[in-house]
Length: 304
Image 1 (cartoon, helix red, strand yellow):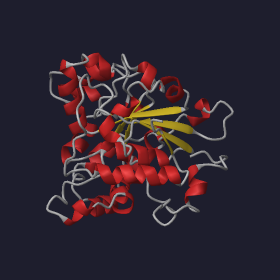
Image 2: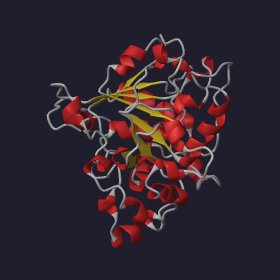
Image 3: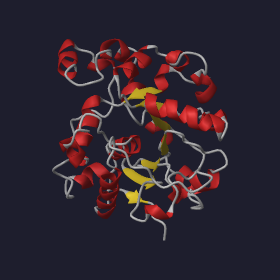
């Protein structure tokens, strides 16, 4: 986050009820610096790190380890970085929040990130696109039929923030260019556009995701037989990463207590109830957003 912002989240969180959960030293992103034999040995005990070393050597520029890598260019005399984090919740449909979302310095989106045809409600800019192989594959499958694959073509300012789930995710990164990520067809440049260089790739640190799970979203699921598949949802990881990197965060399209009123996603053509699965604890996430909003650490969009 920027050094000069006196009202930023980092200065307020320590005084808040979240002070005890917040750890400043956990890196949000991982990059080439994290390739050391000690790190590898330590991380090897956790799933999904076996291909680590080869992968991370690709992420060797400062842009890879800074979430807001172009802040100096973006800030426009501003002391504080303002980030909009946009979930896919149905609450955004008809919200007319598009202009407000696009007016932030940075706009984080995830999964489908469908903006075409929904700009008035969800905006059109995407500076940070969070995805995991699963969400990407699912997005490609489910959007191929509906909104045409062009829905995923992201603008030039977009960075790709990779959320590692499995070993293969590291192998994918090692391939270094999104074109090689998936066997043909379809080629990701068809989805992401041609303008993807490795400077635009970032990757969440597994320590950060584990820290979120243990300190912010320690679900009772961890006491059940589903404990090994449980993790924060992609949207939750993205929102909490923004809270750890931006000075001010507004969240749109995240679950609120009246969620039954809205379809699962803002781009659904017919009403779909929110689906609950064992790998995430969406109700716990919803409560966390309420608490963070109440503590003044994020601005949560709620329908009046």
